[in-house]
Image (tube, rainbow, N blue to C red; front, side, top):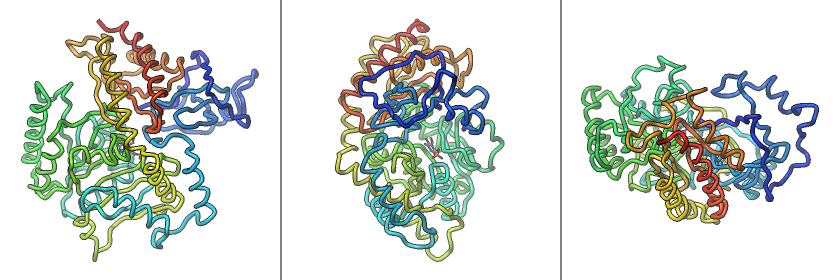
Length: 473
Ligand SMILES: Cc1ncc(COP(=O)(O)O)c(C=O)c1O
């Protein structure tokens, strides 16, 4: 994960385009600002050893940049937590939230409301196949919890299959479904959640030589897991369509179609977790659109409204929704379909269409990011693999291109993570906020990043890779 952590040894950065917020409380010569002191005294941060934190005090943001209270700015190559797809402070999105606040801030989920109705219709119109109904949540983890509850209610089965190298959220069910170290602190977790290996051609669990072999073997493995688990006990297979934080693992062609076929064969609900990969990130409205696959349920959040107001949800097929036509769905949230959040979703979808943001994301991936990273891979001994699509790319760093030994060990921290920490520090010094995870840096800026900003950011990554190269041979 990337966290907003400022290493005080960092050189300050200046930028000609830097807007300075006069109202922000500045760092003074007498020490840290009141914002910083209150944070360190009273704010308990996610996923972190609290004493070790040294957060940047973010004073403002615009488009693809954000800046601190002293005016240092960074090109945001993380989109924060890969959620600010539309860029920071899009004026039309801000205006829509203000307008909705004047009209109706909140209303219980039992009532109908114009913002909620329109958001649901727009999302259903974009979704593939017969995914025509939307249950709104406040974020991604709840979307996964509810998708699983729907699958269980629909099938009358309990078991849920998810992959290693995945993240599905941090609440009870979602953290149990998660296939990365963030799960470890919450184990043993919930019963009935089983892991299998998804495709990852660069580090194949199946000793596959190419994408086609990886696809065939990964599907064979899943079929065997279903056999030994008892396919009739499995309610859902939950997959990140393109695995996000765990490596931008783009499935080989045919894999998702194969999973769809296995689900159909065994009466299992296919859940696509598109919390990170959806809403334009992969250069399509939904990542499944790349492969023409229609899951039974899509979990979304993040890019739906770029996190301007917390929002997530599940897009539901007619067949699954039908299960709850005459019997009540056993679940709900006070803030399900919150008007401020839904109004921002309506506005965001409108802006995406007006500004051609999904098309721009595809252009950035096809014409700028992909070619630039491929070219860097030729020159840098530390680059083992580059992969991705749209504005969703990973650069996987290694000590040796032949052995593929990762630049830092799996889940490294402290001393063992030094090469990655130095790489990230070099990016920040040069005015770029990177998204680093394990031995990778991801290229995941807002989808609205201009061609020039993209080239500027990629040039900084190119320079910073010289640091990683020192550890590679
Ligand atoms: C693929 C995926 N699923 C679920 C989640 C959980 O979303 P949230 O943090 O909004 O609960 C995330 C968050 O990063 C994610 O990347």
